[in-house]
Length: 265
Image 1 (tube, one colour):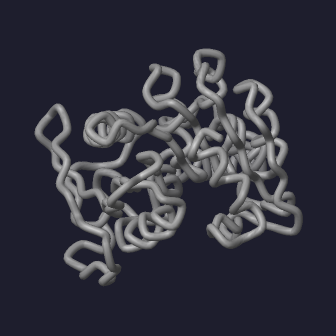
Image 2: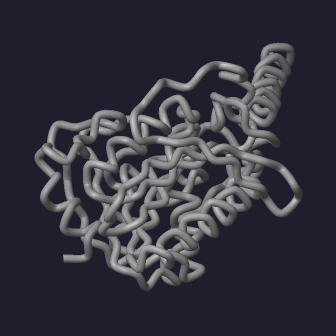
């Protein structure tokens, strides 16, 4: 009995060590991948290099627009680098906005390594670029993010950056989602990247819109709904949609509402 108990303890301890060591790979699965890979040739989308405060450089896709109704700074999910970012930039361009989609540090050809601090640093560099463009054009700046991208978006909005906040399938915090998924492990003590959106929600004063699918099994809909309440945001439920299939196309079922929100109508 003692040996069995010892084996169980050792097995549990091994699981805890594995979770601690592997959490960065789980949270940032595209880190170190896609380096040197060509980007899709997408019309009207250029690639810019942004320099962070420590000299690290990251890439950003920028979808140009001659007479934009707004500029948008959009942060992608954790499984997407700039190869997906150029498509996002092109998709948002259909809403008559100039879309800036930065790549996370350590993703693709961008320098550095992803972590909570570097995500925020990259967000500030991208925000400075996008805010300058919005000022030149005399239009609002919309800060937006999907999934993991909701974290840098909320951090910027809490600092008063941007005129509106758009979130797709966001979480309250990575810690809360991880605790519910790994309830049998001491996640609160093991997690190095809590990515807490809820902690800054009260500081966000901009109008906000949250879109979340009701069949999302990655970030269940209750987390998006809770965050929307804390943000005093309009919550839009996408019936029958999961985590990666939210219909945000300009001609889709939410196109009209998204367009009105992005334009401030």
